[in-house]
Amino acid sequence: MLLKRLLSTSARRLNTVKVPIAEYDSLVSKGKLRDDPYQRKIISNLGSLHKHLCDYTPPKVEIPDIDDLTPKTGFFSKIFGKKKDNNKSISDPSQYDSIPKGIYLYGDVGCGKTMLMDLFYSTIPPHLTKKRLHFHQFMQGLHKRRHQLIQKHGSPDIDTIPILAAEMAQEATVLCFDEFQVTDVADAMLLRRVIETVLAPDHGLVLFATSNRAPDELYINGIQRQSFIPCIELIKTRTETIFLDSPTDYRKVPKPISSVYWTPNPGVSFNAAASRASASAHVENWYNFFSQGHEAEKDIELTIWGRQLKVPKSSPPYVAQFTFDDLCGKPLAAGDYLSLATTYNTFIVTDIPYLSVDRRDLVRRFITFLDAVYDNHGRLCVTAAAPFEDLFVEPEQMKNRYELNVVEKDEPEGQEEELENDELVKTHGFSKKAAKNAKMFQLDEERFAFARALSRLSHMSTQDWVDQNGLKK
Image 1 (cartoon, one colour):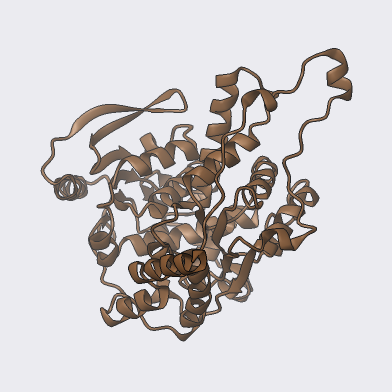
Image 2 (cartoon, rainbow, N blue to C red):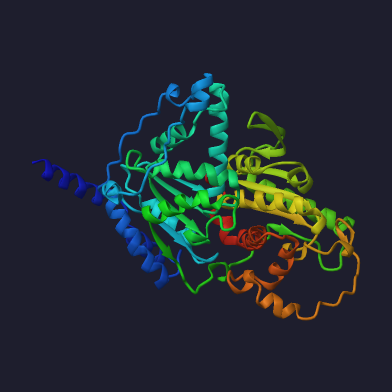
Protein backbone atom coordinates (compact mmCIF):
# COMPACT_ATOMS: atom_id res chain seq x y z
CA MET A 1 0.00 0.00 0.00
CA LEU A 2 2.84 2.39 0.91
CA LEU A 3 4.63 1.61 -2.36
CA LYS A 4 1.42 2.31 -4.29
CA ARG A 5 1.06 5.71 -2.60
CA LEU A 6 4.71 6.57 -3.35
CA LEU A 7 4.30 5.61 -7.02
CA SER A 8 1.10 7.66 -7.20
CA THR A 9 2.85 10.70 -5.66
CA SER A 10 5.75 10.35 -8.10
CA ALA A 11 3.36 10.15 -11.05
CA ARG A 12 1.53 13.28 -9.93
CA ARG A 13 4.82 15.16 -9.62
CA LEU A 14 5.88 14.15 -13.14
CA ASN A 15 2.57 15.34 -14.52
CA THR A 16 2.80 18.77 -12.90
CA VAL A 17 6.39 19.79 -13.69
CA LYS A 18 8.14 20.85 -16.86
CA VAL A 19 10.68 18.45 -18.37
CA PRO A 20 14.04 19.82 -19.66
CA ILE A 21 13.87 18.34 -23.17
CA ALA A 22 10.27 19.49 -23.67
CA GLU A 23 11.20 22.98 -22.48
CA TYR A 24 14.18 23.04 -24.86
CA ASP A 25 12.01 21.92 -27.80
CA SER A 26 9.47 24.60 -26.94
CA LEU A 27 12.09 27.38 -26.92
CA VAL A 28 13.55 26.12 -30.22
CA SER A 29 10.12 26.02 -31.88
CA LYS A 30 9.44 29.59 -30.75
CA GLY A 31 12.72 30.74 -32.26
CA LYS A 32 14.16 31.75 -28.88
CA LEU A 33 16.94 29.16 -29.11
CA ARG A 34 18.97 27.75 -31.97
CA ASP A 35 18.77 23.96 -32.14
CA ASP A 36 22.22 22.69 -31.17
CA PRO A 37 23.03 18.94 -31.23
CA TYR A 38 25.80 19.43 -28.66
CA GLN A 39 23.37 21.07 -26.26
CA ARG A 40 20.82 18.33 -26.91
CA LYS A 41 23.33 15.76 -25.65
CA ILE A 42 23.56 17.71 -22.39
CA ILE A 43 19.76 17.81 -22.09
CA SER A 44 19.72 14.01 -21.62
CA ASN A 45 21.91 14.40 -18.53
CA LEU A 46 19.64 17.18 -17.28
CA GLY A 47 16.66 14.88 -17.86
CA SER A 48 18.24 12.13 -15.78
CA LEU A 49 18.87 14.49 -12.84
CA HIS A 50 15.38 15.94 -13.24
CA LYS A 51 13.83 12.47 -12.98
CA HIS A 52 15.72 11.74 -9.76
CA LEU A 53 14.69 15.09 -8.29
CA CYS A 54 11.03 14.30 -8.91
CA ASP A 55 11.36 11.39 -6.46
CA TYR A 56 13.69 13.09 -4.00
CA THR A 57 12.73 14.02 -0.46
CA PRO A 58 15.56 15.95 1.21
CA PRO A 59 16.46 15.44 4.88
CA LYS A 60 15.16 17.89 7.45
CA VAL A 61 18.00 20.10 8.68
CA GLU A 62 17.97 21.98 11.98
CA ILE A 63 20.08 24.99 12.90
CA PRO A 64 22.67 23.78 15.46
CA ASP A 65 22.82 25.15 18.99
CA ILE A 66 25.31 27.98 19.27
CA ASP A 67 26.66 26.55 22.56
CA ASP A 68 27.89 23.49 20.71
CA LEU A 69 29.87 25.64 18.29
CA THR A 70 31.68 27.94 20.71
CA PRO A 71 35.03 26.61 21.96
CA LYS A 72 35.74 26.60 25.69
CA THR A 73 37.99 29.41 26.79
CA GLY A 74 39.71 27.77 29.77
CA PHE A 75 43.50 27.41 29.78
CA PHE A 76 43.49 23.61 29.46
CA SER A 77 40.69 23.70 26.89
CA LYS A 78 42.75 26.01 24.69
CA ILE A 79 45.68 23.59 24.85
CA PHE A 80 43.89 20.24 24.74
CA GLY A 81 40.50 21.18 23.31
CA LYS A 82 39.60 20.01 19.83
CA LYS A 83 37.21 21.89 17.57
CA LYS A 84 34.43 19.74 16.21
CA ASP A 85 35.22 18.60 12.66
CA ASN A 86 32.21 19.11 10.46
CA ASN A 87 33.91 17.88 7.27
CA LYS A 88 32.32 14.73 5.92
CA SER A 89 34.22 11.70 4.69
CA ILE A 90 33.53 10.36 1.20
CA SER A 91 35.29 7.06 1.89
CA ASP A 92 31.92 5.24 1.78
CA PRO A 93 30.12 6.31 -1.42
CA SER A 94 27.04 4.23 -0.54
CA GLN A 95 26.06 6.78 2.12
CA TYR A 96 25.13 9.11 -0.75
CA ASP A 97 22.89 6.61 -2.60
CA SER A 98 19.69 8.39 -1.61
CA ILE A 99 20.87 11.81 -2.90
CA PRO A 100 20.66 12.67 -6.62
CA LYS A 101 24.00 13.40 -8.27
CA GLY A 102 24.28 17.00 -9.39
CA ILE A 103 25.92 18.40 -12.52
CA TYR A 104 29.19 20.25 -13.12
CA LEU A 105 28.95 21.73 -16.62
CA TYR A 106 32.07 23.36 -18.05
CA GLY A 107 33.18 24.74 -21.40
CA ASP A 108 34.41 27.86 -23.14
CA VAL A 109 32.75 31.24 -22.86
CA GLY A 110 29.72 31.59 -25.15
CA CYS A 111 28.91 27.89 -25.61
CA GLY A 112 25.53 28.07 -23.82
CA LYS A 113 26.27 26.78 -20.31
CA THR A 114 24.30 29.48 -18.51
CA MET A 115 21.33 29.06 -20.84
CA LEU A 116 21.21 25.32 -20.11
CA MET A 117 21.42 25.90 -16.37
CA ASP A 118 18.65 28.50 -16.52
CA LEU A 119 16.51 26.11 -18.57
CA PHE A 120 17.05 23.34 -16.02
CA TYR A 121 16.39 25.73 -13.15
CA SER A 122 12.96 26.55 -14.61
CA THR A 123 12.04 22.84 -14.60
CA ILE A 124 13.09 21.91 -11.04
CA PRO A 125 10.13 20.11 -9.42
CA PRO A 126 8.04 22.54 -7.32
CA HIS A 127 8.18 20.38 -4.19
CA LEU A 128 11.90 21.22 -3.89
CA THR A 129 13.34 24.59 -2.86
CA LYS A 130 15.93 26.06 -5.19
CA LYS A 131 18.35 28.95 -5.55
CA ARG A 132 20.36 30.24 -8.51
CA LEU A 133 23.36 32.51 -7.89
CA HIS A 134 26.42 33.78 -9.65
CA PHE A 135 29.30 32.20 -7.74
CA HIS A 136 30.86 35.57 -6.92
CA GLN A 137 27.54 36.69 -5.43
CA PHE A 138 27.31 33.49 -3.38
CA MET A 139 30.78 33.97 -1.87
CA GLN A 140 30.07 37.59 -1.00
CA GLY A 141 26.88 36.52 0.76
CA LEU A 142 28.70 33.73 2.60
CA HIS A 143 31.41 36.07 3.95
CA LYS A 144 28.79 38.65 4.90
CA ARG A 145 26.63 36.12 6.79
CA ARG A 146 29.68 34.70 8.58
CA HIS A 147 30.62 38.24 9.66
CA GLN A 148 27.07 38.82 10.95
CA LEU A 149 27.13 35.60 13.02
CA ILE A 150 30.48 36.49 14.60
CA GLN A 151 29.19 39.97 15.47
CA LYS A 152 25.90 38.63 16.81
CA HIS A 153 27.49 36.09 19.13
CA GLY A 154 30.49 38.23 20.04
CA SER A 155 33.15 35.59 19.45
CA PRO A 156 35.59 35.40 16.52
CA ASP A 157 36.31 31.80 17.55
CA ILE A 158 32.79 30.54 16.88
CA ASP A 159 32.63 27.81 14.24
CA THR A 160 30.11 29.36 11.85
CA ILE A 161 30.24 26.63 9.20
CA PRO A 162 27.50 24.36 10.67
CA ILE A 163 25.12 27.34 10.91
CA LEU A 164 25.94 28.55 7.40
CA ALA A 165 25.47 25.06 5.98
CA ALA A 166 22.18 24.48 7.84
CA GLU A 167 20.81 27.81 6.64
CA MET A 168 21.78 26.96 3.06
CA ALA A 169 20.10 23.55 3.26
CA GLN A 170 16.93 25.09 4.71
CA GLU A 171 16.84 27.73 1.98
CA ALA A 172 17.50 25.54 -1.06
CA THR A 173 17.70 21.83 -1.83
CA VAL A 174 18.97 22.48 -5.35
CA LEU A 175 21.74 25.07 -5.50
CA CYS A 176 22.80 26.42 -8.91
CA PHE A 177 26.14 28.23 -9.26
CA ASP A 178 26.96 30.11 -12.44
CA GLU A 179 30.61 30.90 -13.30
CA PHE A 180 32.17 28.70 -10.61
CA GLN A 181 35.76 29.85 -10.12
CA VAL A 182 38.00 30.17 -7.07
CA THR A 183 40.80 32.75 -7.05
CA ASP A 184 41.15 33.76 -3.40
CA VAL A 185 42.61 31.71 -0.54
CA ALA A 186 39.99 32.95 1.93
CA ASP A 187 37.23 31.88 -0.46
CA ALA A 188 38.89 28.51 -1.03
CA MET A 189 39.21 27.62 2.66
CA LEU A 190 35.67 28.76 3.53
CA LEU A 191 34.16 27.09 0.49
CA ARG A 192 35.85 23.79 1.18
CA ARG A 193 34.18 23.28 4.55
CA VAL A 194 30.81 24.63 3.42
CA ILE A 195 30.68 22.36 0.35
CA GLU A 196 31.81 19.32 2.32
CA THR A 197 29.05 19.96 4.86
CA VAL A 198 26.09 20.77 2.60
CA LEU A 199 26.76 17.88 0.20
CA ALA A 200 26.85 15.38 3.08
CA PRO A 201 23.91 12.94 3.49
CA ASP A 202 22.52 14.71 6.58
CA HIS A 203 22.14 17.95 4.57
CA GLY A 204 21.34 16.43 1.19
CA LEU A 205 21.94 19.45 -1.03
CA VAL A 206 22.16 18.91 -4.82
CA LEU A 207 24.66 21.06 -6.74
CA PHE A 208 24.47 22.29 -10.34
CA ALA A 209 27.48 24.40 -11.35
CA THR A 210 28.74 25.94 -14.58
CA SER A 211 32.37 26.91 -15.08
CA ASN A 212 34.97 27.76 -17.68
CA ARG A 213 37.32 25.29 -16.02
CA ALA A 214 37.32 21.55 -15.44
CA PRO A 215 37.11 20.60 -11.74
CA ASP A 216 40.79 19.64 -11.59
CA GLU A 217 41.72 23.11 -12.86
CA LEU A 218 39.86 24.96 -10.10
CA TYR A 219 42.08 27.21 -7.97
CA ILE A 220 45.07 26.08 -10.02
CA ASN A 221 48.38 27.41 -8.57
CA GLY A 222 46.41 28.93 -5.67
CA ILE A 223 47.87 29.44 -2.21
CA GLN A 224 47.40 26.31 -0.04
CA ARG A 225 45.70 24.57 -2.98
CA GLN A 226 46.49 21.18 -1.44
CA SER A 227 43.95 21.97 1.27
CA PHE A 228 41.30 22.66 -1.37
CA ILE A 229 41.77 19.40 -3.29
CA PRO A 230 39.35 17.41 -1.01
CA CYS A 231 36.63 19.87 -2.04
CA ILE A 232 37.45 19.29 -5.72
CA GLU A 233 37.33 15.53 -5.22
CA LEU A 234 33.97 15.76 -3.50
CA ILE A 235 32.55 17.90 -6.30
CA LYS A 236 33.75 15.29 -8.81
CA THR A 237 32.14 12.54 -6.73
CA ARG A 238 28.81 14.28 -6.13
CA THR A 239 28.26 15.70 -9.62
CA GLU A 240 28.27 14.41 -13.18
CA THR A 241 31.12 16.30 -14.84
CA ILE A 242 30.14 17.33 -18.37
CA PHE A 243 32.19 19.16 -20.99
CA LEU A 244 30.07 21.25 -23.36
CA ASP A 245 32.14 21.36 -26.55
CA SER A 246 29.69 23.09 -28.86
CA PRO A 247 31.50 24.64 -31.86
CA THR A 248 29.01 27.54 -31.87
CA ASP A 249 30.07 30.69 -30.04
CA TYR A 250 26.72 32.25 -29.18
CA ARG A 251 28.39 35.57 -28.40
CA LYS A 252 29.10 35.91 -32.11
CA VAL A 253 25.63 35.13 -33.43
CA PRO A 254 24.59 38.45 -35.04
CA LYS A 255 22.03 40.46 -33.11
CA PRO A 256 20.62 43.90 -33.77
CA ILE A 257 22.51 46.69 -32.04
CA SER A 258 20.58 49.12 -29.88
CA SER A 259 21.69 52.67 -29.22
CA VAL A 260 22.26 52.33 -25.46
CA TYR A 261 25.99 53.12 -25.83
CA TRP A 262 26.81 56.67 -26.91
CA THR A 263 30.24 57.78 -28.16
CA PRO A 264 31.21 60.93 -30.09
CA ASN A 265 31.41 60.86 -33.86
CA PRO A 266 34.88 60.03 -35.27
CA GLY A 267 37.17 63.04 -35.14
CA VAL A 268 34.86 64.96 -32.76
CA SER A 269 35.98 65.67 -29.19
CA PHE A 270 33.97 64.20 -26.32
CA ASN A 271 34.09 67.63 -24.66
CA ALA A 272 32.91 69.59 -27.69
CA ALA A 273 29.66 71.50 -27.10
CA ALA A 274 27.80 69.50 -29.75
CA SER A 275 29.00 66.22 -28.25
CA ARG A 276 28.01 67.22 -24.74
CA ALA A 277 24.55 68.24 -25.93
CA SER A 278 24.13 64.95 -27.81
CA ALA A 279 25.33 62.90 -24.81
CA SER A 280 22.98 64.77 -22.48
CA ALA A 281 20.01 64.12 -24.76
CA HIS A 282 20.99 60.43 -25.00
CA VAL A 283 21.04 60.07 -21.21
CA GLU A 284 17.78 61.97 -20.71
CA ASN A 285 15.92 59.94 -23.35
CA TRP A 286 17.07 56.58 -22.02
CA TYR A 287 16.48 57.58 -18.39
CA ASN A 288 12.89 58.50 -19.22
CA PHE A 289 12.46 55.18 -21.02
CA PHE A 290 13.97 53.04 -18.24
CA SER A 291 12.26 54.88 -15.36
CA GLN A 292 8.82 54.22 -16.89
CA GLY A 293 7.62 57.66 -15.91
CA HIS A 294 8.71 57.49 -12.26
CA GLU A 295 10.25 60.61 -10.76
CA ALA A 296 14.00 60.74 -10.26
CA GLU A 297 15.28 60.97 -6.68
CA LYS A 298 18.60 62.44 -5.58
CA ASP A 299 21.20 60.88 -3.26
CA ILE A 300 19.32 57.79 -2.13
CA GLU A 301 21.42 55.92 0.46
CA LEU A 302 21.77 52.15 0.50
CA THR A 303 23.04 50.41 3.63
CA ILE A 304 25.67 47.82 2.74
CA TRP A 305 27.58 45.97 5.44
CA GLY A 306 26.68 48.67 7.95
CA ARG A 307 27.83 51.64 5.83
CA GLN A 308 26.10 53.98 3.42
CA LEU A 309 26.41 54.00 -0.36
CA LYS A 310 24.95 57.08 -2.05
CA VAL A 311 23.17 56.75 -5.40
CA PRO A 312 23.34 60.20 -7.06
CA LYS A 313 20.19 59.84 -9.16
CA SER A 314 17.69 56.99 -9.38
CA SER A 315 14.10 55.85 -9.71
CA PRO A 316 14.02 52.64 -7.61
CA PRO A 317 13.91 49.87 -8.65
CA TYR A 318 13.93 50.84 -12.31
CA VAL A 319 17.11 52.79 -13.00
CA ALA A 320 20.14 54.33 -11.28
CA GLN A 321 22.52 56.88 -12.80
CA PHE A 322 26.20 57.38 -11.93
CA THR A 323 29.17 59.11 -13.44
CA PHE A 324 32.07 56.73 -14.07
CA ASP A 325 34.04 58.51 -11.32
CA ASP A 326 31.18 58.03 -8.82
CA LEU A 327 30.96 54.35 -9.66
CA CYS A 328 34.60 53.33 -10.15
CA GLY A 329 36.71 56.20 -8.83
CA LYS A 330 35.81 55.42 -5.22
CA PRO A 331 36.97 52.37 -3.22
CA LEU A 332 33.82 50.30 -3.78
CA ALA A 333 33.97 46.51 -3.56
CA ALA A 334 32.15 43.52 -5.04
CA GLY A 335 29.54 43.61 -2.27
CA ASP A 336 28.64 47.21 -3.15
CA TYR A 337 28.17 46.40 -6.82
CA LEU A 338 26.16 43.25 -6.05
CA SER A 339 23.83 45.24 -3.81
CA LEU A 340 23.33 47.81 -6.57
CA ALA A 341 22.71 45.11 -9.16
CA THR A 342 20.04 43.45 -7.03
CA THR A 343 18.41 46.79 -6.17
CA TYR A 344 18.10 48.32 -9.64
CA ASN A 345 17.07 46.90 -13.02
CA THR A 346 19.11 49.27 -15.18
CA PHE A 347 22.20 51.49 -14.89
CA ILE A 348 23.22 54.61 -16.76
CA VAL A 349 26.96 55.31 -16.47
CA THR A 350 28.16 58.61 -17.94
CA ASP A 351 31.53 60.11 -18.81
CA ILE A 352 33.57 56.92 -19.19
CA PRO A 353 37.09 58.14 -20.07
CA TYR A 354 40.01 56.58 -21.87
CA LEU A 355 41.78 54.15 -19.54
CA SER A 356 45.36 52.96 -19.42
CA VAL A 357 47.56 50.59 -17.47
CA ASP A 358 48.18 53.18 -14.74
CA ARG A 359 44.47 53.10 -13.84
CA ARG A 360 44.00 49.37 -13.55
CA ASP A 361 42.15 49.92 -10.26
CA LEU A 362 39.34 51.69 -12.14
CA VAL A 363 39.24 48.94 -14.77
CA ARG A 364 39.03 46.23 -12.11
CA ARG A 365 36.11 47.98 -10.40
CA PHE A 366 34.29 48.46 -13.68
CA ILE A 367 34.72 44.75 -14.49
CA THR A 368 33.36 43.80 -11.06
CA PHE A 369 30.40 46.16 -11.52
CA LEU A 370 29.73 44.86 -15.01
CA ASP A 371 29.82 41.21 -13.88
CA ALA A 372 27.29 41.96 -11.14
CA VAL A 373 24.90 43.71 -13.56
CA TYR A 374 25.28 41.07 -16.27
CA ASP A 375 24.76 38.15 -13.89
CA ASN A 376 21.61 39.78 -12.54
CA HIS A 377 20.31 40.36 -16.09
CA GLY A 378 20.45 44.12 -15.70
CA ARG A 379 20.67 46.64 -18.52
CA LEU A 380 23.37 49.20 -19.16
CA CYS A 381 23.39 52.59 -20.91
CA VAL A 382 26.59 54.66 -21.20
CA THR A 383 28.29 57.71 -22.59
CA ALA A 384 31.98 57.07 -23.27
CA ALA A 385 34.98 58.67 -24.92
CA ALA A 386 35.18 55.81 -27.46
CA PRO A 387 33.72 52.36 -28.17
CA PHE A 388 34.71 49.94 -25.41
CA GLU A 389 37.33 48.02 -27.43
CA ASP A 390 39.05 51.34 -28.18
CA LEU A 391 38.94 52.79 -24.64
CA PHE A 392 42.06 51.05 -23.37
CA VAL A 393 45.19 52.83 -24.57
CA GLU A 394 48.86 53.35 -23.74
CA PRO A 395 49.55 56.18 -21.22
CA GLU A 396 51.54 58.20 -23.77
CA GLN A 397 48.55 58.22 -26.13
CA MET A 398 46.40 60.19 -23.67
CA LYS A 399 46.19 63.93 -24.18
CA ASN A 400 43.64 64.10 -21.37
CA ARG A 401 41.03 61.74 -20.02
CA TYR A 402 38.74 62.19 -23.03
CA GLU A 403 41.12 62.93 -25.90
CA LEU A 404 44.14 61.20 -27.42
CA ASN A 405 47.41 62.47 -28.79
CA VAL A 406 48.24 61.39 -32.29
CA VAL A 407 51.10 58.99 -31.61
CA GLU A 408 52.73 57.13 -34.46
CA LYS A 409 53.60 53.81 -32.99
CA ASP A 410 54.97 50.81 -34.87
CA GLU A 411 53.46 47.51 -33.92
CA PRO A 412 56.08 45.23 -32.33
CA GLU A 413 57.41 42.68 -34.78
CA GLY A 414 55.65 39.36 -34.42
CA GLN A 415 52.78 40.78 -32.37
CA GLU A 416 50.13 39.56 -34.82
CA GLU A 417 51.38 35.98 -34.55
CA GLU A 418 51.70 36.33 -30.77
CA LEU A 419 48.08 37.43 -30.51
CA GLU A 420 46.95 34.58 -32.76
CA ASN A 421 48.49 32.15 -30.26
CA ASP A 422 47.30 34.00 -27.17
CA GLU A 423 45.23 31.67 -24.96
CA LEU A 424 42.39 34.20 -24.87
CA VAL A 425 42.14 34.01 -28.67
CA LYS A 426 43.16 30.42 -29.35
CA THR A 427 41.37 28.70 -26.47
CA HIS A 428 38.53 31.00 -25.46
CA GLY A 429 37.66 32.64 -28.78
CA PHE A 430 38.06 36.29 -27.78
CA SER A 431 39.13 38.88 -30.34
CA LYS A 432 42.77 39.79 -30.86
CA LYS A 433 41.99 43.36 -29.83
CA ALA A 434 40.57 42.10 -26.53
CA ALA A 435 43.65 39.95 -25.96
CA LYS A 436 45.92 42.89 -26.74
CA ASN A 437 44.11 45.18 -24.31
CA ALA A 438 44.09 42.46 -21.64
CA LYS A 439 47.89 42.58 -21.52
CA MET A 440 47.58 45.41 -18.99
CA PHE A 441 46.97 42.63 -16.45
CA GLN A 442 49.53 40.08 -15.29
CA LEU A 443 47.34 37.34 -13.84
CA ASP A 444 45.57 34.95 -16.22
CA GLU A 445 42.34 35.21 -14.24
CA GLU A 446 42.34 39.00 -14.54
CA ARG A 447 43.13 38.89 -18.26
CA PHE A 448 40.29 36.44 -18.78
CA ALA A 449 37.89 38.57 -16.71
CA PHE A 450 38.80 41.64 -18.77
CA ALA A 451 38.27 39.91 -22.12
CA ARG A 452 34.99 38.42 -20.87
CA ALA A 453 33.88 41.90 -19.79
CA LEU A 454 34.36 43.21 -23.33
CA SER A 455 32.34 40.28 -24.65
CA ARG A 456 29.57 40.94 -22.15
CA LEU A 457 29.50 44.62 -23.00
CA SER A 458 28.93 43.68 -26.63
CA HIS A 459 26.11 41.32 -25.63
CA MET A 460 24.47 43.95 -23.42
CA SER A 461 24.40 46.44 -26.29
CA THR A 462 22.05 44.30 -28.38
CA GLN A 463 18.37 45.05 -28.78
CA ASP A 464 17.67 41.45 -27.73
CA TRP A 465 19.31 42.07 -24.33
CA VAL A 466 17.58 45.43 -23.82
CA ASP A 467 14.18 43.93 -24.67
CA GLN A 468 14.42 40.74 -22.62
CA ASN A 469 16.13 41.95 -19.44
CA GLY A 470 15.76 44.56 -16.73
CA LEU A 471 12.20 43.79 -15.59
CA LYS A 472 12.98 41.28 -12.85
CA LYS A 473 12.48 43.31 -9.67
